[in-house]
Image (cartoon, rainbow, N blue to C red; front, side, top):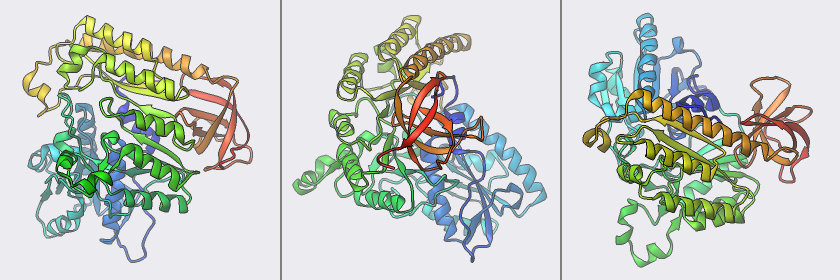
Length: 489
C-alpha cells in the first residue's frame, strides 16, 4: 500500500528482499557458487527462479556471500533510468570484489541486457556474460564460452519460449507465496514503454503446465500464488504460437482455446483452498468474464492492479493507450458493481511529453472518481528506443513534473487513508506471511484485497489463514487481533 513517488522498484526490493542473494537448497554434487540479484518487476524474480533451476543442473549452489561467488548474476530492469543506474552501481560493487577474486565471473540478465546488448560488454568491462530474457536455456553454452576466456552474449528474442517446461527453484521463499508465470512479452506498444523491445511479442504458456505447477506448489505447502504476465488478461492458449496468429487457428483450436478467465477458473478449481492473485492487467484487455470469474470463486483474491497512466484522453492517445477515460470509468463501474469488495490499485505517470496543467487536472479528477486503494506513481522517464523518445520532446520541466507528482501522491495518500479506514471494526481474513518489520512479537500478512495487516503472534504461525478483528489502522496497514483460524486454513 505504498503511495509515495518513485517506489515501484524499491517496493519490490522490500517485499521480496531484492538485493539480497537468493538461497537455493544445496545439491550435494554441486560445487560452484552462484550469487544472484533481481531488480524491477515480479517477472524478473520469477525469471531468476528459472535461472537458478537451470544452473542448479549445471553444478551451481547459491550463496548469500558475494565474496564467495564463482558466478554473479544481476537480473535487470529497464523501465526507468533510475532502475538502470541502480544496476550500474551494483556492478561497481562487483568490480571491487572481482579485483580480490579475479576468477569470479559476472553476468547481466533481463531487460537491460536485452536493451543494451553488446554495448554492455563495451561499457562495463567487468561484465563477462549478457543474456536476454528469452535465452536462459542457453546459459550452459554461454558459461562454457566464459570458462574458456571469451565474453558471451545471447539476446535473441523468442516467439515461442515460455519456460513452461522448467520447474522454478523457489528462491528466498517464505514457503507461503509464489509466482507462476503464464505469459511473456507484450504487444501493446505504449509509446513510453520499453518492454515490447526487451521482452518481445506476447505468447502464452500451456495451461496444463500451469495447473501442474499450481498443484505442485500446493503439495509443497504454498498457500497463495500470483499468476504473472506483462499483460495477464491477454492470455490465450490454443496450442502454441503468438496470440496475433489466432485468426489462423483451426476451428478445433478456436473451440478448445483457453482465455484468461477460463485459466483463472481452472486454477481456482484445481486448488480450492489456495489463494490466487494475478498481475498485471491492462484496461483494454480486462473483460467482464474475468471480473465475473473473480466473483464466482472465493479463493480468487479481490484485488485488481489496473494501470491507467493518465486521466487525460489526449495524453492517453499520445501514450498509445487503447482506452479512453470514459471506457476506464465504465470498467471501474463494472468492477464495483460485480465485486463491490474489490480493491483497485494504479500506475500513474506525471509529466508525460506535452502534458498541460489541464491534462494533470484530468488525472486528479480521475483519481477522485475511482479512489484507488493504493498505487505506484512516477515522473516520466524517457526510455531509449521507445516511440516517445524517438518522436516526442521531453518538454515538461523537471520542477513541474515533481510538483504534479507530489500532488498525485498527496491525493493518493488521502484516498488510501479513506479506503483503509473502511475496514475499522470489521473482521478480515489474513494469510500470515512474515514477521512484522516493526515488532518481533507480531505477524504480518495480507488480506484478499492485498492490504497489509499486523497483529500479535500468539500461537499462530507463518502460513496460517486467520480472521483478524481490525481495531486501528494507518493509511496503509490494518492493526488488530487474530480471533481464530479461517474455515479454509
